[in-house]
Length: 70
Image (tube, rainbow, N blue to C red):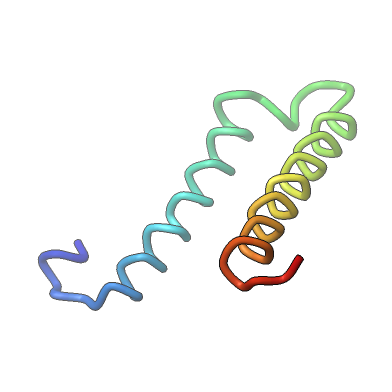
């Protein structure tokens, strides 16, 4: 789609990231049945915690290695 419509790099990357998050959410809900069990609160808490840890890791790495803060 990005190639055929001759979009810029930033627009293509934005579309890629948005569709990746949509796909991940659909796979969690539809294929892994995340909202259908009795302990769905625990499942979603674990998902939120893992997203938080991933963001801290990514931004912490950017902060120290690229932006020069230590």
